[in-house]
Each structure stands twice: as C-alpha cells, then as structure tokens.
Amino acid sequence: MTAAIIDGKAFAATVREKVAAQVATLKADHGVTPGLAVVLVGEDPASEVYVRNKGKQTVEVGMNSYEHKMDADTTEEALLAVIDKLNNDPAVHGILVQLPLPDHLNEDLVIGAIAPEKDADGFHISNVGLLGTSQKAMVPCTPLGCLMMLRDHHGSLSGLNAVVVGRSNIVGKPMANLLLRDSCTVTIAHSRTKDIEAVCRQADIVVTAVGRPQMVTGDWIKPGAIVIDVGINRIPAPEKGEGKMRLVGDVDFASAAEVAGAITPVPGGVGPMTIACLLANTLTACCRANGLAEPEGLTA
Ligand code: GUN
Figure (cartoon, rainbow, N blue to C red):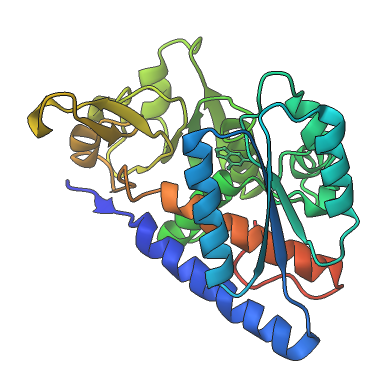
C-alpha cells in the first residue's frame, strides 16, 4: 500500500482562509479586530524568523499584530511589566512569548504571568489543567493542528488506538489529552518504553514528537494507520553537495509511506499548521473576550 499524503501546507492555507473570513465578519458585525502580541527577547536568528512569519500571517488574515522586541539582557521585572501591560490592553486578545528565553529568565514564571484567556500558545498552567479536565481551554497550537488534520482525514476518531511518541509539555502531553477527549484509546510512548515498536504497531494513529531523525520506520506501523510526524530534524545531505543539510521528521518517510494509510511529510506536513492554529487561537480568544460564539471548525 502507498499512503495518502496529508498536505499540511494546503490545509494550513484553508485554516487561514477560514480565520480570515471569520475575522472579516467580526469586524463587519461587531467592530472588533483580533490582536496578537508577540514578545521576543534577544536575537536568536531562528526565533526572529518565526516571529517575522507570525507577524506577516497575522496581518494577512486581517488581525492586528503587535511586536515587542526586547534586549537579550532584559530583566525579568521588565519582561513581566510588558506582559502585564498586554494583559490589560483590550486591543490584545492573544499573547505569545517566543521561546526559548535567555537563560537568566524563568520560563515557567513568565508564561505563568500571561492572562490565561490571552495565552495563545496554551502553555499556561491553567490552560494545561483545563485541557486535562476537558474544559474550555486555550490549546497548544501544534497538537491542535495535528488534531484538525486527523479529523479532516478520518472524521470521528472515537474508539481508535492512538500512540503518541514523546512526552513533552508542548506536544506529547497535550496531544494525548486531545486524542483522549476525542475518545481515542491513548498510549504515550517515550525513551523508556519497552518494545516501543510493538506498541506503535497497535496504533491506528501514530503521532511522533521526539526530535530523533527517522526513528520510526515502516515496520513500526500497522498497515493502514495514520501517521502524523511532528519532528523537524536537520541532517546532512551529501547528495545535495558538501556541507548541505535537509529536513526530515521523526518518521522514516519512505518506509512508513509503504505501510501507512496516510502520512504527513516533513517539510510540508504539521509545520505550517502551527502558525495557522496560532491565528485560530487568537480568533477564539477574541470571540470569547467579546462573549461571541466560538469560531466554526477552528477549535478543539
Ligand atoms: N518557539 C518555537 N516554537 C514556538 C511556539 O510555538 N511558541 C512559542 N512561544 N515559542 C516557540
């Protein structure tokens, strides 16, 4: 069998179109424009690229984008003061503090200072608890994107066996909670899991988020399973020339695609969904702040 390719780039474009349409309606019917504030501390080049892309896509869907760039030696006090200002600014519905932060800043403390209802990343401990108890939460963007792709591909996920490989706070754990909420039977596998290959072979859905290039091979996959690869790993690509690199996922795409029913490629799979879901979350936060109905098809 050759797997269907789940095209995250195209799917993310449809999510952005839906967001843009609902933003236009919000503006026209209620005079409200959703606003997303991104705080970047320091000059990490990868973070600067992310933040630029976020700002560009925010404006493209008709939202207001606010950027706060702060020096690498910013004090915790100064950063907390900016967050406090954004928490109290009615034009700001979503706040994102770009991670990683410089070492002298306590990430838990900083994320904990964001008003939970404006926590566009869904990283605040209140949102973690709300998701874990199936209440209305802000949901982390990457797992939300994976869930949207799974529902779009398969419809109801009820009763399916799902294995999440990786137990990070940002992807693995929230992904497992979302799948559980959609009535999957969920296993979280990780570096200490015994016979992880056999565990994965039981799965109708495999989501990988471990940061280990091409770890999951076709013989780990049950025939017909849906494979969602969150990993983005850079490996040497001598075939492209000396010193060149290429991106691969946590899944060995070639062998897994021979067995799976559907699979996300890297690049062009989950990656583009993260910012699309950040925009969806900002819209959701704006609707909630204004007592309006949740946006259609853009929430968990
Ligand atoms: N750094 C890399 N990805 C992300 C993300 O999704 N959110 C935040 N806050 N920081 C990141």
